[in-house]
Image (cartoon, rainbow, N blue to C red; front, side, top):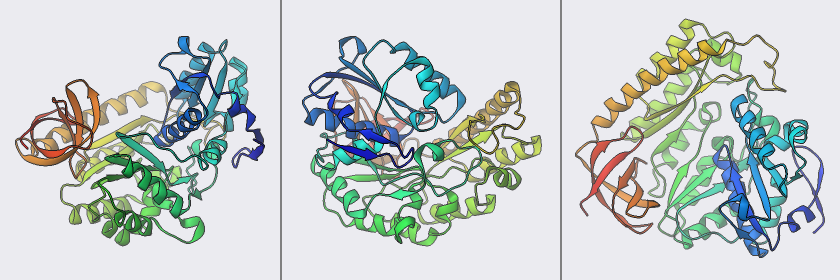
Length: 421
């Protein structure tokens, strides 16, 4: 099968490593972001094409694959425990850790390394997709940002957008297979095309012209890249194929901390983006991310973050306690003690939960259209409204079913719904 060079590590990887996974039973664990899950989905199609079977436990497998994440210290430690757990198996490792923490991996086990680049290159000759459910379409690898705390950029490298025709072909394939929800993902979706003179709004307009019954969830976007394309991006979201869902990580409500983070936008930039989307899409579902306990974050800086979420009223706040990562500019600076980070995380979560309850109250007892995107278990499905509200309906409905439901109970991150049509 030959060799290809990994774009991040620069090392050659013998594609025969993947041949060792042909015609065997494979158990896979995947951690981290949706991009990692996209790599796993492609690998599964490659393995099935080559006669392998995906099994549900290591005990029944001939090979074990761990798709790793190393975004924060606690995740890294969990990864090393999982790798140690499978050290006596026929073990393969992929994801972010092999690119930046290979020594740590080989300190606990001796696996074969699978390159994400190899997976994508081989998948291009196969291009099969599973039927139904929620799909992931990767639109770019790497990032154009310079965040001072992030190890992912070192693992994934600089921005490398996937060509538009390849993305559209994959979406068409999933739509043809009856997939109701397609999540487009990258380390920063809004930076797509910057490396070859195109922009995300143009891609979304092209997606909007595709045939079929499917919905696109646009993944995480950096405010620094969104602000350059804001007006066109808001307009592109008007497509009936696109969920009115915005995942826009702000990370802090303090401009001083944002500058230390290297985020390349201000709080005012973030709020301008949110306002532009909410003015156009009044029931927009907004998710954001916050880091608490960052280097130098004062109580005033933290209070500014609390004030910001009160102003923008997000539907979800992903709260992360700052974690020093190796190979980053701030890796050697004095860190806050854990108790301060835990306290700020708890206080922000309490504030966020009150906001969720206030926002969600306005949806109760109202009918909303929906499409069923996933089967949770027998007798229960997950559905999504056009604004990406999660609705659990306790019925056996097929994936792709469309109807109308009354939102009966607030479950914080989703609703219990009763189908009325």
